[in-house]
Image 1 (spheres, rainbow, N blue to C red):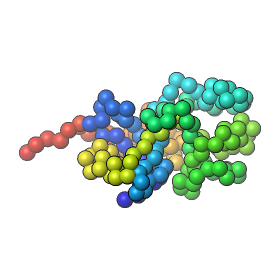
Image 2: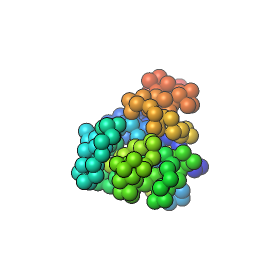
Image 3: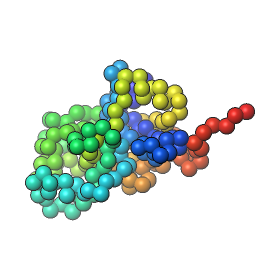
Image 4: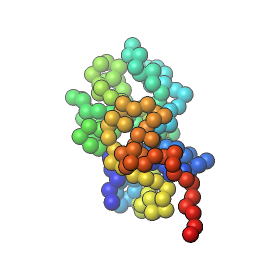
Length: 182
């Protein structure tokens, strides 16, 4: 099982947990573990404010969108999920239409109108040790579905989890936190 370029949808049993009601995009998955970015948990900081803190100025109002709380690991590190663009040499290709970077260069390119058309900026990431994610899936902690860039880049944060679940024909509101006994 390789879940790179897949969504993880938190099952209702994760209530009260950091990952409650989250949609996580898996950027890397292998024998050594997995790494992903929570893509539906906005912070109180906008991309514009983050750029100003980094002394990068821009007049692009669309950058007033929030920075995401990408996960509980390394919350001081920034990550950028973005669409391909000409200067994306420091980015890692996850799929043909989704790349990942932690390079300041991507943010600089955005401010200079040389950057990607679609951008998600997150602080922190979600990480799993080898075999941990597979075990959590066996315990029904997560639903998984192949990711798509429309949900990632063109869907409101509040709707992302439900839209991802619909890829499987699942209504998240109809799921319960625990299974019954016969």
